[in-house]
Structure formats: C-alpha cells, structure tokens
Length: 344
Length: 56
Image (tube, rainbow over the protein chains, first blue to last red):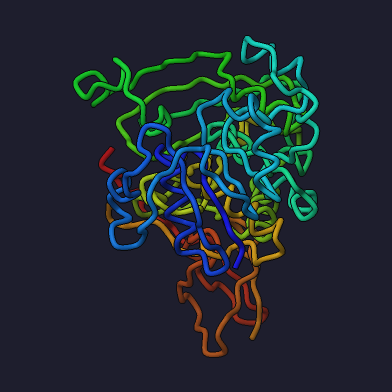
C-alpha cells in the first residue's frame, strides 16, 4: 500500500480528502494533522466518517515520512515550510493556492504579497488532469486547483482547444458558488441569517482564481464575476464568448463530445426535455464529475458554455486524488467512480 | 445494424433491423426525438418536441 498523510485535515477539503483516501484501494492514510484538534478523532470533526476511520489528529511536529503528503492548509501556509514538508513526503500534493501560479510576479500581482518560496513554483504541476495528464505522470509535486478556476477552465477548454472561440473578444465568466467555498472558518458573512437565501455578488472582477484561468488557458481577455448563492456545495461557471464565423451547433457538439470522450469525469449535458437540460451542481454533490453544456446563437455567434462541479470534489479533493492516481500509475478513476446523489 | 447521423448533434446512432417508417427514436447523445422518414436508405428528421414549462 502507498502511505499518505494529510496536513490540515480538519477543514472541508481535508475532510473530503480523508473520505476519498479511506476508501481508495491502494492508499493507506497513516497520519492526519490539526494543531487545534490534536488528540481528537477524525469523526468528531468529519461525522460522516464515523466507523470508517479511527485516526486521531496529531500535531504537525509528530508527522513521520510517508509516500504522499497532502497539504490542505490555509492559503499562504504551505510555502512557508515547503522545505520541511519535502523532507516528509516522497510526493507532495498541495491543495492551497500557493503553488498554482508559475510566476512569482503574477503571484504577487494577484495575491498582494511576495511568495516565500518562489524557486519552488516551477517544480509544481497544476493538478488538473484534463490539461496536464502527461506532465502529472512524471510529477513529484502537484498543485491543487482553484474550484472556481476549475469550473471556468473546463467551461472554456473545449472551445479554446478546438480554436473555435474568438479570443480577441472579451470572455465573461459568471460563477454561482456555494458556501463551502469559504472554508470551515466562520466569518460575519457566513453567519446563517446573513448567508442563507443570498444571491450576493462578492467579486465583480479581479477574483484571484482569474490568474489560474489566464495562465492555464493562455488567454488574457477573461473576466470572472463571483456570486454566492444558497448552496452548500457546488459551483457553476457560465461563460459568454463569441465563436469564429461559420461555427455551427454541430461543430460544438463535436468538440464537447471529444472533450468528454478523452476525459473520464467530463460529461456533456444538453437535453431538449426534462428538468436537467443544462449542467447543474445539485446532482454532482460528493462526486468528481464535471458536467458541460453549451448553447449557440447562430445569428451573432454568441456562445454560452456552462460547467458545473462540486467545488470540494472536482474543484479540490477529487482532482487532487485523480492527479495522484495518474502520478502513481493507477487508473485515473480509481476510488472516484461514484456519481452524485439524486434526489438531494 | 445501419447507422444514422443525428441532424441536431451529428452523433452516430445505430438502428435496429426491424425499424419502421415514422417510428420515433431518441438520439443517444443529445436526446432529441428523431423520426424515421425513409427506410432505404435509412433517414431521420427531427421530430417536433413540445416545449415544456420548466417550472422556473
């Protein structure tokens, strides 16, 4: 068995990693850390794992070497001690934003602070298999993905890969996101009377995940608008752009179908009847699937591309485990094959 | 088994040997209704789909 430890396992992403890895047939989770909760059982924080894990949280100083070290720390923490983490894990998968960007200058531009370990940025592979499958096979260090960035990138990937999108025109991504994106730490905005029933646009543009989208797609004319909605899990990216002249609906079907056939967790959802005609995160909760849909206005070339994910899964822990599978030479879907729930 | 191309999404759909004129089949990819309008060669056209109220 391959041994894995999770640093910062008390958060939502850490909890999802633990849920996935406990049931992974090739992985043995040996240690989980939390400074605040050292000594407590994992199920006391992640109650869905009762009877499935007898692991107790330990302090980070008690960590022993392992094969895969997952870092699920708050943004900014992994980079401070990356040398020490490297001594403990043969491979590192960092789910924070610390090693997603290739450039220290871009990191400072978007995050407003200089990077503590700029020399490490180029060592990490961006952990989105749909873009970096081949590089992941030889990776030692993998960066996790931003949930909103994942939904945005995958919404646009078929159009950009096929060169059907006119990238000279502005590309607008409207994202609707659930409350778990805010993490397990409370703030005034997460207080139930304030958070429930919201449709709250909290970032009209300039969201940090924009940097990942621009970097990974190689297109700069992109803007993300973020809106909180009354979901716990889930993110939907609705992309608006313009296709090149002569592009037809059938052309789009071909490229979306190709994307789905080449990537085991992508599915095309474009139905003429029923209530699930377009991608919707509701039925993806808990799964690693990413549903893609599109619509084309033949008269003016306006294309709408929709991507739905579970932000904690395809947008975080699920993609991390999928990337790990590729890195270790396992089947890419191992331990992730299950669909979401319906109804929920 | 003969194949027909969906006029909506260009997906290739297999046809059963006992297919009949005016039979409605469903495209496996995009889910539209397709009506058999010729048997030799097998040809389909989009069948009318009633607009549904999503309740939205």
